[in-house]
Image (tube, rainbow over all chains, first blue to last red; front, side):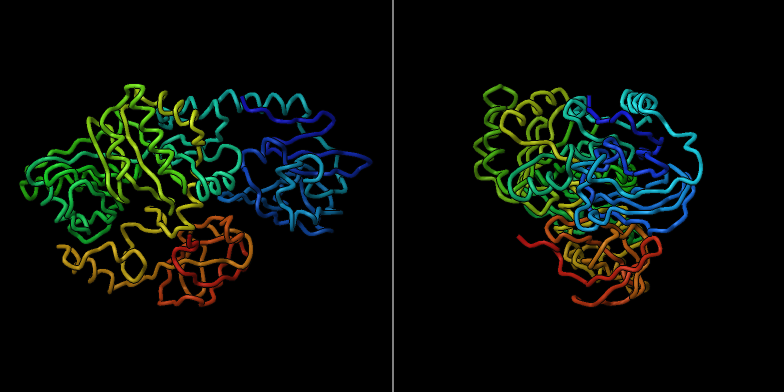
Amino acid sequence: MRKYEIPSGLFYTEEHEWVDIKDNIGVCGITDYAQKSLSDIVYVELPEVGREVKKGEVVCTVESVKAVSDVFSPLSGKIVDINTRLKSEPSLINSSPYSEGWIFKIQIKESSDGLLSHDDYKKLIDKIESGR
Amino acid sequence: MNEKKTPFFEFQEENLAHFTEFAGWKLPLHFGSAINEAQKVRYDIGFFDISHMGRIKITGADSINLFRKIFTRKLKDDSKGYYGFLVSEEGKVIDDAVIFRKTESDFIAIVNSSRKEKDLELFNYEIRKNNLKVQVEDISGSTFFVAIQGAKSFEKVKTFISILEQKGVVSGFSEGIKSIKRFSFIEKDNFFVSRTGYTGEDGFEIYAQNHLAQVFWDTMKSIEIPPCGLAARDILRLEAGLILYGLDLTEEDTVFFSHIEKFVEPDFERYKLMQSIAEKNPTYLRGVVWDNFPIPSHKDETEPSGYVTSSVFSPILRRPISFVRFKSQVNEGDRVKVLTRGKANYGYVSKIPFVKK
């Protein structure tokens, strides 16, 4: 079986984004499962700081050698910071999806309803893996 | 969810393959890193499960006459394979294929999985119409097919075959392999080894009966020939300037005015027909190296007028590369603009192959 890191304390989406919520700011990225499925990430198209986004809206894209993947915002709010290191080192998402490979920070406008807990997301991954 | 699986599927799962759907098959996309897999093949070795590709035996006294009608190359020599195109009586390119000639009445066609049914239709149509004495046998289902590719594949494949002989799996191959030349092949009792491939590297393609999948996998593992996925295969074939039927070439496209026209011999029966069709609606397949990301998608429009047929990130050039089908003549070095998801990107018309060894 493939092994995927799913840290506790974070929230997740069904589209394989993660968000770390502290003091009304959510740090967002894509999960270990997402980066392993894509394999080598060669380009990240970052969002603009200041952009207002709705939960579920496409915020940016990540590209592997073959595939383009949309990254959806896990929350509604305003983009307040982006990880500019990803411009020159997109592979940080592969090597460190939950830390150095974070993608954007969002100032949360609405409550974080509808996000998956660690346990929910783990169940989702187990289901995907067993369905192979 | 009803994708076909190859005899290697279980082993690929154990090796943590990430799968993709391709032409109705569930095939490994990568085993962790497509870039590492591609680089491994460029400088060392790797193998691809290409069991999805069609393997068709064509035998009988009129076999050579069938190919004279439908295949763009002259199949002159025994024990040799020829890359070319299968062409209908309307002058359309039905598929690209490698036809291996064992003798004048004994051939093996390797065709694209997505086109196999169309190819079989073409064979059978021409056989009936011309009353040819030819038997067609699709052996794809009873065999698997692997491509062992890479700079070091010659030495490793010699070892591989000699281990299989020691294990009693095959016999009488190792002598022939020692002197096998590019595009030559040896076949006996549905065990086939050719010195061919689609990566731009030296390499071998081998098919064998399904029950040998386990011993193949274990032997390759024991001599460190790692499995590679379709994403790596796509990087390698595009860097080498090799086309993918269905994207870079379809029934509606011409092979003329591009680097693949050399695979149509001027005395091919349907040459003039193909040429007259092409001249009515000329298009120009070229390679483009892009300055930046994003990687253009299939059908993205370009200036000069044309569209992207396939793209990949080239680890050697560190840039996206594409085949583009232009509506007018362009030359090496010309600048090209593409719109990808609303974003402009620029590049230049490149030499083919993109990457020269």
